[in-house]
Length: 321
Image 1 (cartoon, helix red, strand yellow):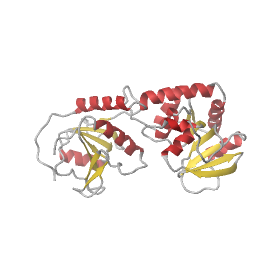
Image 2 (cartoon, rainbow, N blue to C red):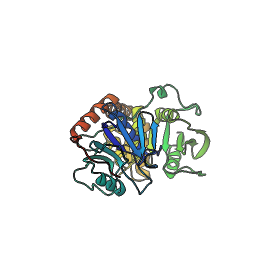
Image 3 (tube, rainbow, N blue to C red):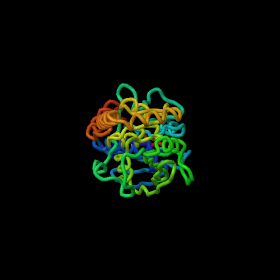
Image 4 (cartoon, rainbow, N blue to C red):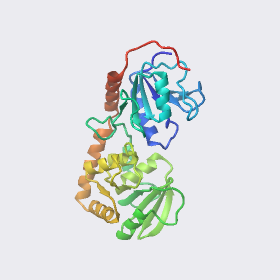
């Protein structure tokens, strides 16, 4: 086959709810503007499948990864989750240039590089799309706006809202609190359940984000905090747990709030319920998120520069079996 511009090792590629999969797809999409991209995913060795702009190739079952025959190794390899098994496969294959998004056990090879997505001197960033039409109309299931939106940190059916949502509903009895869990939005007021609606599409979630006073994300993503970025791009300030990594970086940079206990959560929510603090934070959040995550053309350029800098010289080598 022709030498690809990049090979993406997508351990999480098929996990549609994985933030790592979202990030890897964003970077892979940008890389397609610079050359063919081959994506390796869990699956039968030799299996090939089209996935939009990508050519998926099976690299074996979990724990038995192997570099597929016919896929060149003298190119940049981008890995979403650099597990020891993946590192072993890449070492056996002699991959000369490896970039990775996450590695639970550190960097096993000093020549391989971790991509900075949020923090650091020059984070790559990714494109996080939202539909601005979400701001025109509220979610069809609710007849109110300016609620406190809580993205839950749990799943399954529960008779009571998460503790953080219960605190908010008790403290601000005249404010609606909407809790999203397992693709269902539950509306609470004064600790009483008002009703629920399903969140069937991403557009439904964007509408909920766009018409909230603030978004409390109890379990933000560990890599870019995607839902926090979406909220900010739609002009909604965020409130996140202290120590939540990227989400905390976003909140501190935009006038949002962080909390480590009930009192801090309530103070942060109260501050954003007041004007002009809320309006200032909304403007700051939108500007910050649009500049860093709203420019797909910019991402293409950054990925192109990255691939050019990291691209190894071509070499001939036999396929690894």
